[in-house]
Image (cartoon, rainbow, N blue to C red):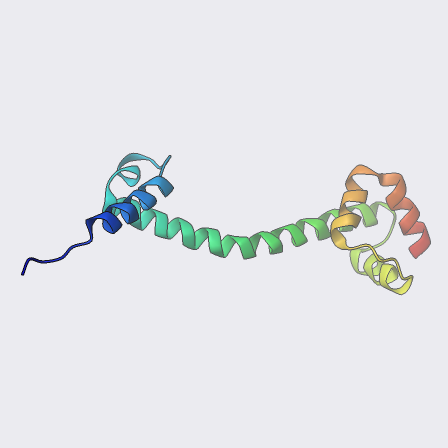
Length: 114
């Protein structure tokens, strides 16, 4: 009895990986073994960095709020403590956006917190 191989599925699998490797440099884009490793590594980075992106943005928002609060004579921790105590329901993303794009609105919040 002849050996049964599923060439259709194998070709589809390889085609899918090579399509994902489109745009890579050198043999990473067209050699199956190299492309497979490159795509696998890229997927790991993508999975990891979806989590890291959230951390990075929170850190950026904190830096922006801190800089804007210090312009008005408060530290970040004093400002955020005052925001919580005064019942202002704005998150760090919105506060950072106000600090960057609408300084007058941010100053009003700082005055309310003081």
